[in-house]
Length: 120
Figure 1 (cartoon, rainbow, N blue to C red):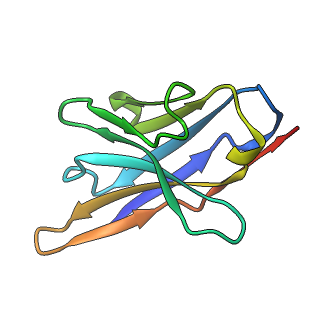
Figure 2: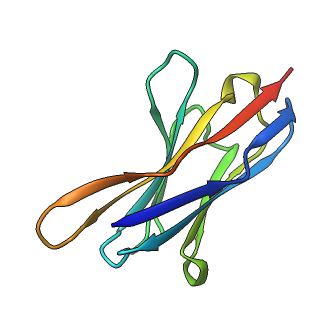
Figure 3: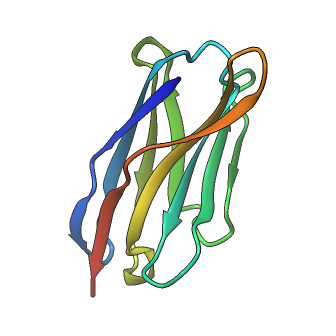
């Protein structure tokens, strides 16, 4: 089992910044990637950013490239999403996600979500 706990959401004006954190605990030894997703009201959850833990490769959705940065702190088992130049359309619940195995099967794990609201 893996537990993911997010923090750092809130309200900000357009052009502002927020940093989200996702702390992982439990059976994290098999994790090789972590992601951030967002879900806007009435829409499907969509991938925002991914970090590959083995080589630190990072991938971003086109909508956030150049504005958002995903990073990690191995000592704290924490992944961050630095969000700059925020736009009203970034308003959503943001979820941390990963996949891990118990040696038999892989499972998806999600955090509880953190609300980000960007006002114009």
